[in-house]
Image (tube, rainbow, N blue to C red; front, side, top):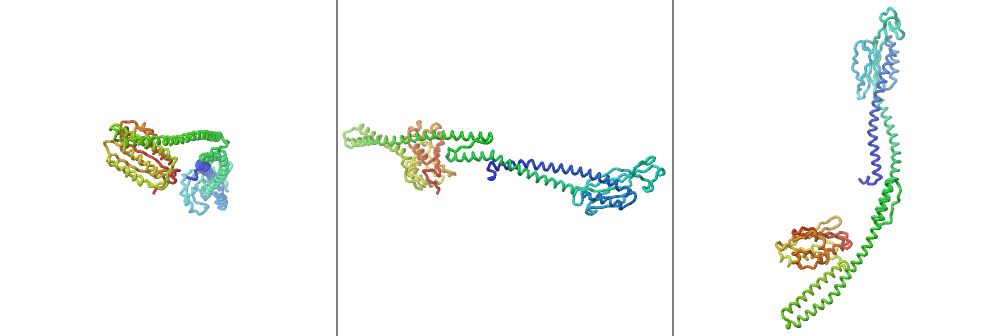
Length: 518
């Protein structure tokens, strides 16, 4: 994703993800724990409220005072968590009841109590909306003397609230209080508190994020950005750029390493430039030497050829067959040396004397070469196949004719004696260049000879090769042409199983202009 490409954005994403990974489970645990604590506290409140209400309605139950009971029920219902209160007598008859939201909102099953059971009962139910509430029942009890004749308080019908009755006493249930406490309000309070806490946490996190990211940007992202900018300018060739060393130990060490690398690179480039200058001068001197030698050798060779030709014309009748044969050999050798000198001179001119550039259809060039070599191809029963339609490129037509002529001619020369030569020419268009190949089924090349064949006069030493006439200049010329166009050439071969010469031509090579495909 493009939005996460920078270090700053990635650090922000990591920070926010870390906060989320910690905060989300934390919020869930806090919420769950708060609900459990709240439910426990609400249960205690319901129990205590029921016990207190049972004590407070004792007189009302004994006396049947509904006004007193109503006043107590209203007081209990004053808490919004209490959703209903029912007060009943010893027989279970409801003396007074009050509901919040209607009696039918809270379906209440019968509360089973055994005779003489004075314990408080509670259960958790759900209202019609599905919300949980605590349903609790506690008996209203009072003490009574075993012998009422010993002490009778007429106003309380034989019961007393405080003090000790003479003789033995017992507790009896005179009624009951049943009330419901909903979880709804408590849940809402927990959520409100939780949301408030989350809001506060988010505010704190936002300020913490701004502070943390500011520090990270200052001490990590910004130094890395400066180093990236410096690396970019170095890649563009500005070796004077340096990174200011400051920040943490790791960042400063990285900056120092980058600066050291640039120093070493600058020193290496300076040394390479000196070597290249020296090599360029030597190459120029070599080319000058070749031109000079070619010129100086051509003059005496022309004289020798002229003298031999004159002797052959003027004194042919006076010479025996042996003399004529030797003069013919002199003339042939002179002609061969002149051809070699011409090829050396042409090799030196590939780079210095450029031919006119034009859009050249390489299919036409190869067809012309095949036509010119047709006698040799037919003589050996060979075939030349252009597998893929070759591109049209901006180049020197004569140079590329020379290139393909040398490669095809080599494939014909070094073919097997017992097998007709098959030559295949093709190419592949890649993103930045064209990749060409010339494949044959000839005698092949040994691994140790794959490099030397591209050097001048470096012919492979083998009985099969020695039978073939050659000067050792053709592949050197091919290599020089490819290098002038910014390409590369290599050979893949297994001895005895043919060879494939590959060469690449950049589409935007300086010598080519813009390569185009038709």
